[in-house]
Length: 179
Ligand SMILES: C[S@@+](CC[C@H](N)C(=O)[O-])C[C@H]1O[C@@H](n2cnc3c(N)ncnc32)[C@H](O)[C@@H]1O
Image (tube, rainbow, N blue to C red; front, side, top):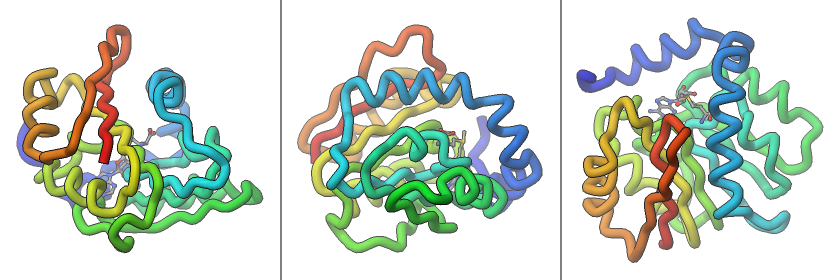
């Protein structure tokens, strides 16, 4: 895979559209959320960031205060419809490499199947580390990362500790990071 161009990535997801995204990927992504949420379940009073939130499929499952961020205006608008009326949820159009949030402003950070789209995935991980307070749950698409390259990427982030789950049957590696 060559290095992704962010503008092209946004155009690609905008062109796909939220309805088609959900039809194609909601089952696959749902299996990843099942695995993530078994290990990392935020409480209702916690603030959770979902970086690269797409159409809001993960946010819909959470009872916490949710902030979703994505670079695709079209997918964000689908997320907006999905989450309308759902407690405390906010959506932000933005870039994972320069998050518009204060340091340590969220209890937990999730990012599912985002990093393959980022020109410099380490910079996105370091942004998650900067804005998070307690834990990060992040996945890496197996088509883009071997388990070893995913581990090396996490090691470069100098987190206090992390584990990578055995995720056979899933298309992503899953990592849980302590901040
Ligand atoms: C494979 S989708 C995953 C979406 C969502 N996490 C899910 O589980 O359905 C990748 C998402 O990352 C978003 N994305 C790609 N590059 C991004 C960037 N630089 N900043 C923020 N979001 C980005 C895309 O627009 C898309 O919504």
